[in-house]
Image (cartoon, rainbow, N blue to C red):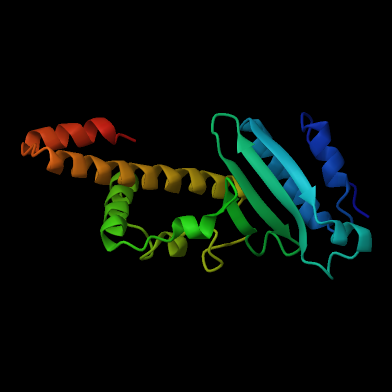
Length: 199
C-alpha cells in the first residue's frame, strides 16, 4: 500500500479523517492536496463518512464514500459535496449551499432574469455564458467536468454565481422601485445602477 505524505501544516483532524479512507489511495492523495489548498483559504472543513462504506470495507458496493462540508472563513455559506469513489473522474454529487440544492439554485425559469444574468456575466467576465442556463454552464455539470477541476474551483463558482444572482435580484428590485416612484432620469438610472452593482 502506498504511504501518503501529508503536507506540513495540514490540520491534524483532517489527516485523521483522511486516514479512515481505506482502499482509495488515489482519491486520498488528491483530496489531501485539495483540502490543504482549501485550508490555506481559511476554510473550515469537516468530513462525514458514509458508515456503510466504512463498515463493509468495500467502497465499490456503495459509491458514496463521504460528505464534505466546507465553510470559507469570510463567508457565511456552508457548501456540501458528496464525494464518490470515481472522484475526480466524475463531479461531486448533491452539491448544496446552506442545505439547499445547488442544481435548483442554478435553475432560472424567468427569461427576463436569465437575460439579466447573461448581461451581468458578460459585463464581469467579458464573455457570454457558454450555455443557455447556469447549470449547463456550471463545472458541476457532468458534461463540463474534467479531472483537472478541483473542489476549490467549484467553491469559487458557487460564490460567483451567488454574487451574480444577488446582483440581478437587486437590480430587478431597484428597477421596480425606480418605476414605482416615476424617476425617469436616464443619468440617474446609470448612476444608481453603477453605485449598486460594482464587482
